[in-house]
Image 1 (tube, helix red, strand yellow):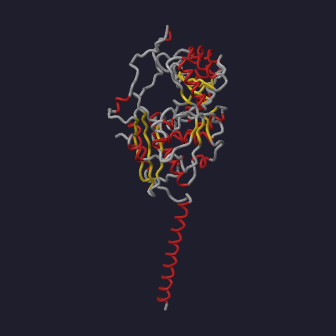
Image 2 (cartoon, one colour):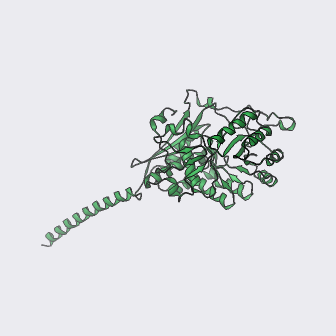
Image 3 (cartoon, rainbow, N blue to C red):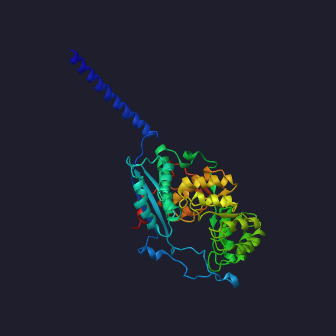
Length: 434
């Protein structure tokens, strides 16, 4: 009798346990559907793209001034040129990051990689992916710290390393947004605006051509345009800036970019002429990024607002810039300075110091643009963002399943889940390189 009773008890326990497991499984499915279940990373894949794709070897695309290249000006201005960066023979390149979970959910990210995208691909495959595989993709910020800390005692804190981390970070935020069924700005905490102001670059070989280009963009709807000053042969003349300023008048603002061309004494002289113009929105990268003390001196001497930040890669560099009261606004690059996670920290630090924020997007894809729009809309000290014409380029809406919305002078913040820029992989394949 005792044995029979025990058998019935065992059966009751078995059925109770089975029902419990079934209920637990059902609960687990409901939790996963609502964004509370596990999200294990199964694969991390770098994808290198180039437009036009071409068949040349990677090194063919890099152009650099010759060793000993000088600025080419008169007298003391004809000195060694430290500022001219590498160029890319007309090609646009990027390294994308595709992270897939065991449940088949896909998140996309992007590294700022215009020069040597295969370097980022190697960093991601050989160093970052082994850290990420098997981890919970919902742990976006803890994973960022793990990736950054994995090599910091070996001196890795900028450049290819943080650009590679940025690609991973964007993919993780994209995953989290899709998982929760919410756009990125909402999981960051909300947005201050539905559209972010954008500016457009202008070009022309003469002051007259530059002025005409500026008027054309203003007529299209842009309220701000940007031009170079000392960004190459024949561009050092301040008269070019003065001509564009006159053409704009009170219809908008002119942003000026020098890519670190000047020394402090040179920048003071140029800056005095910019100070006389009524519509200069900012002077970007007047000095080399290492010269924070020089920026402080220049800022104290000029009325023209100073902007820097695209050359910096982490919040510690920006901390030093802010502590020195060296700039009026910063333009970090999401796909260079550690992604959404790090750039949000940078922007908060900027706000604490009364410094304005403007995402930098000189090159890249529509994903880059969309992530920047989300973060810009989320932050209280945003004023404008770059990339006003990016969606019209080959890596813009043409490679997306659904286009992003923009008008001249404004980027509409995506409302789709995640970053909201889902690649059409068939379209992407036309640009993919080994």
